[in-house]
Image (cartoon, rainbow, N blue to C red; front, side, top):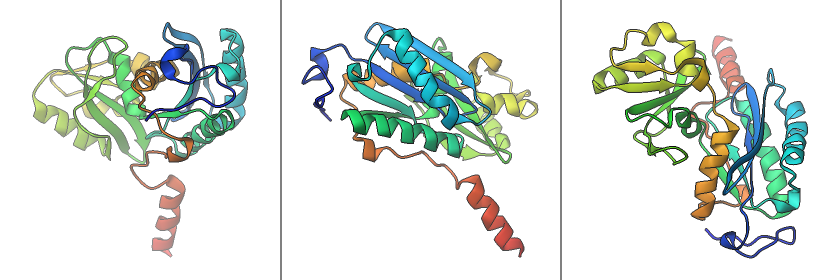
Length: 253
């Protein structure tokens, strides 16, 4: 969709001005913020928040804006990781991103966390399996083909949640070299270590990075692949943990 900047913007179309994107990453334990434009990432910050996403996010946004010497009025769009991931973290990040976008009349770019994790293996010529620990003995995952540095990966499968054992069987059945990235593989190493054709990136590829989020968002913004703030929703692949706990308690009583 096309989008005209409001009174806080400096131009009437994306191609007439420098595109500056604020990216917010809160789908995992780490909080990440990045600013990018056509030249690449201009500033970024990441913090292990210990689930204090709400307290960490605003100071990090202010810090990154200062480092890049960018004002809120310079922004062209707001990108946010919509999950799957930590339920509270996703809601904090989405709410903050929506507030900024509504206040400045900006478009938003929702990005799947697994798309961002896959970018940690942008160099791969093999199939990439991106997986995040979903807790409760499950993992979120999707498969990708990479298309070069800074280019959005092609999804082979849609994001799902399953047991790590089911994912291991799926990967084994493919019978091809696969690069595995993300905390889902780190958390359940014992399940995946027997995979014959798997290559594990390890800790360096465990989490979605705000820098990759901004890179993906830049491509989508240039293609006018944006949405209104009210259309942004978390990607829930299962019920929130609090709801599961309540259902379990009810079934036991």
